Image 1 (cartoon, helix red, strand yellow):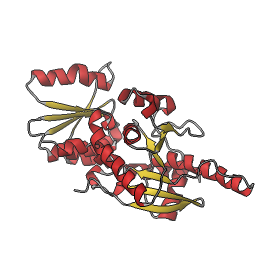
Image 2 (cartoon, helix red, strand yellow; image 1 turned 90 degrees about the vertical axis):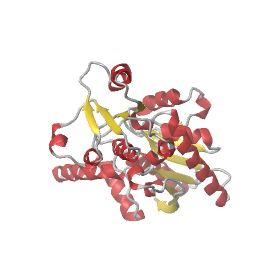
Image 3 (cartoon, one colour; image 1 turned 30 degrees about the vertical axis):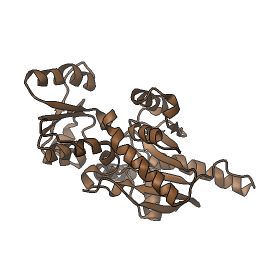
Image 4 (tube, helix red, strand yellow; image 1 turned 120 degrees about the vertical axis):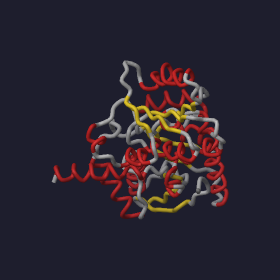
Length: 313
């Protein structure tokens, strides 16, 4: 099971060189940031644990990874969601289907409480009363346990930069809970730049503070050109995803990566305009893009985009 030491590819995008850290090539069950975030649990002896408790979307990459983790550690996964579309129940696919195949119990929370509050106030106390030993892993692996694997990733990045004789680089990635970006910034001497894919810049800032109160250790947030709603289909996302796949032969995920590449596209276009006008670019540091995997989700995202395209033609 490969959980570290991924290669770095060099690609060209709009005339600009970008390095891509290929964490998508990690073990298929823990591809990308899940291999890093769950590294601690993969290394631990969980033989005394009966149940892993998680929560999030029914199509989250973390659901599938947690299901595999539970199977490997010979315990159960109880995964809580705030809703479960009937279409998905009738037509299991993507991460949801894969998690069910690994024995995950996916439970819809029927409560006035938020899912995480329901888990903390009701589920975990009830399991304790029943004598069940449980470990709670917050949505997307947003917890201090994630730091171990992400420090390893940071060390790999430092080693790579030294091998290229780069004194300074920019590390760029899309962010959901911001966990990967936060712990990378904590352990890197380089600037980490992340774009908010869930809930906007204010939400991402809150997530950073939840993990680390020292603002000096927070990544820089790359502000998008407009507000995008997480999970909604945007044709510019599909178009840039297609362009990257065709020009680089690298498949990115359709949910997070397109927004980060749109931010880079805007930056590169401005730099090209400045170059044409004889002006210097403001930032010439090499860019290392972190490919965090998540390709399992393309199984459901791609058909949705193809259906949308059929309506706009």
